[in-house]
Amino acid sequence: MEEKKLRISLGKRLRSCPSFRSFGVMSNWEDYDFHVKELIQSADEIFYPSPLYDPLFRSLGKRVFPRSYYYFMGNKIRQTDLFRLLEISHPRTRVYYGRHRQKRVLEDFSFPFVAKTPVGSSQGKGVFFIQNEEALMSYLNAHNPAYIQEYLPIDRDLRVVLIQGHVVHAYWRIHSPGNFRNNVAQGARISFDDIPEEGLAFARNVACRCRFDDVGLDVCYAHGRYYVIEANMVFGFEGFRRAGMDFYDILKQMDIEGLL
Image 1 (cartoon, rainbow, N blue to C red):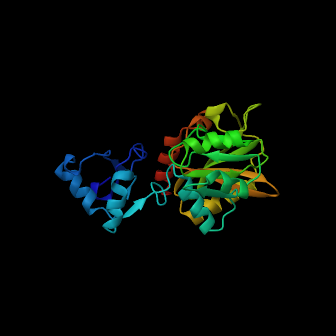
Image 2 (cartoon, rainbow, N blue to C red; image 1 turned 60 degrees about the vertical axis):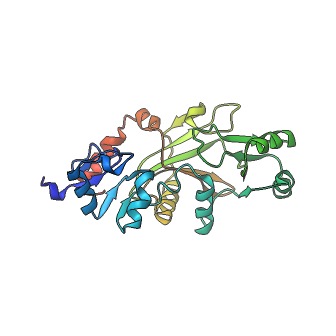
Image 3 (cartoon, rainbow, N blue to C red; image 1 turned 45 degrees about the vertical axis):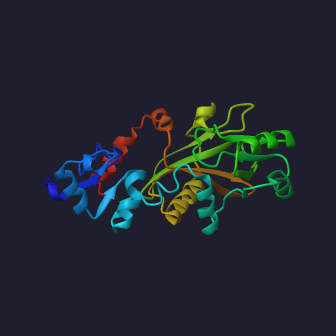
């Protein structure tokens, strides 16, 4: 393959893909050698530019892949705002800043409800089941802003992984007894049985409207409809391993088929 036909990726997500060159993310621009700088500067589109270079390349008018990625990565507040703006079904959620937050929360929500660490949490570690005022006060003392969400009576959610709008994997995450969280890292059981096509269609619609090009969506069904709970730009591969799948082989095959 001629070099001029190669596409440029900084992150290593596409390192197995034959039409890409992955150069890694250097913390200083001058650390790239002259040849690599020329390739990056001449490219119309940069793949996985990292949070460091994503806004820089966008400001220069370059296309970046994935879209709607780094800005929303690990930030539940931004994701909730996006879902609201697009009128996508999402658990009722409010964010509280400043003083008198306990009073305002209790004016809006009845026990039980869910409280979350809004930025930077993962694997279910920043998710709290709030059943009384003592638990709420403990959460508020450790979190400002407060991210409060309605509790949905579910025992599972559906993790749907999509690349370029294509569902590449989906599985149930069923919580363990005594734990309301559905995260695999919190002991949830993975199941591949009876994956609903309606849930996959809902996830595809969410990814398309939000312009999520590489995402693991957490979807659930409650009160007669589907909800998107959260978008994960960094997701674990245990569900792939349990199914005998290799995520990087999937990307490689998508590249060969011209889907990237």
